[in-house]
Length: 188
Image (spheres, rainbow, N blue to C red):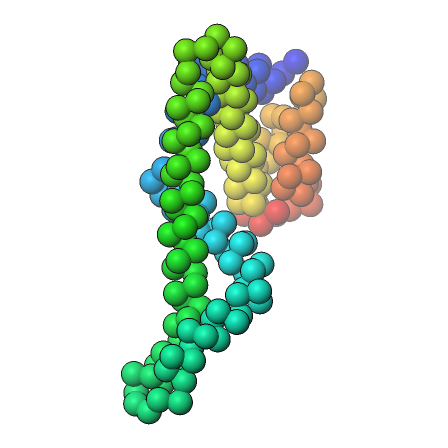
């Protein structure tokens, strides 16, 4: 085993310990509030909203008929920006935000129950969630270093060679980085 393997094992154990210590309910609340919650809601709205946009067309046409055929610059602007679609996504965003907040609060409260089995599940899921976040951050770091290329990527690639946990293959497959073929500073 090389040093990178021991570091990876240490990071995994620390992530599992922190995740279990804090618990799933609190981590879920943390990762779904603030800017994270806003981003989650926007992504959900984009996915759900575009999926059901065609089905909502009769409703959108009924809304746009309120100003259809009326004269004036204000009604022209409403027509050009498709305000009915904007309103559709605003209402969907508000609904998703409310459902997200209620869902997270229910899950958090259930996870923080004093029941022994629920406590075990809360700690286990918390450990797994924080481990997943740690792995995501490590993969993101590998991807950024591989894309930057240059001496740092070459040193990392060389340092990961012979890893028992196959970190060298993870880096190579994730980034497509092959040190011999890239000039210094090239994007991989």
